[in-house]
Picture 1 (cartoon, rainbow, N blue to C red):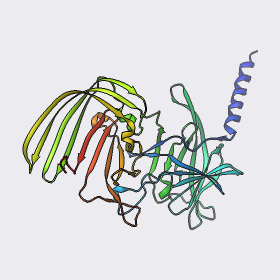
Picture 2: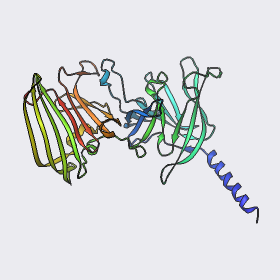
Picture 3: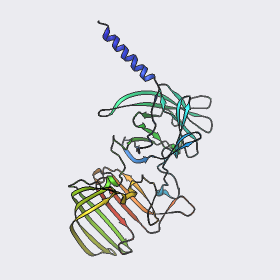
Picture 4: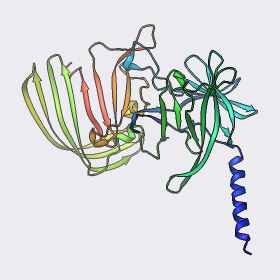
Length: 384
């Protein structure tokens, strides 16, 4: 009787060892969900956020291809570079290989980056091959189980990379030697590099969630911006300009009541609107008008369809101009409320896929998460 508890413990340990030794299929990404990645600075804080998702799935001769969105970087239109293609333009899944499904990503030169999803401790494969024949070897070094959220257990495999010469000689100090990345059961790849610019780019990105349940860093789409809570007080600034005349409105919306409406999906709000509009001409104040009204406002989410586009994805508006949005989270601004800025002052360049500024026209809107329009600038002016 004394030895029975010990035998039970031994059996449990053996079972765990057997479980860890068995290869498991972990999805690298989830095509139906938006993935949020962030850069991390030396202080361990997030900076830029990138939203990535699959836009097309195609059965190709070599396997199933998953195409990612690719955006022209309008901030540096002359360079005409891609900005949100962190994972490259597509991922190809090679089924039926001896190692299980092999996932292939591609950099800007078309070179292949290989990642397995059928994993077990000490699995080894070639991650990337350089032009001179040297290569990056991937090896599964750790398996862990942990609670990623209260009541939700998750597990991950840690993969370490090492660089070798063509003859197998280790090349310490050559990027990405001794770097690692993790593959999580519920979240896929939780650490990646800029595959499109790999291996030149050494910047690593960390996953901040799939539609982000963990960190709540999600995109600010139309529904997120205009689902207002009763009792909210929202302040905004609107500016319009026509030559030397500038109209500036400082306003506030007080949400008295809200009622969901049918298609197109949105809300009816009872709003108390207060504010002041100032007209200046040549820097001199000409008039000041105040307003104080209670209005019923209907918000249809599809009116703000351009907010539903991912960051820096060009959107063609009815007037032919092209706009794009930038998601921002700054704890020092708007009390840490996430916001999204939409710019639409660009036109497609002639004979080019780049976007070019539309002369002197400037149009910008900024929307906050749950508080609607925060700021608007229109260079056309109300009398243009």
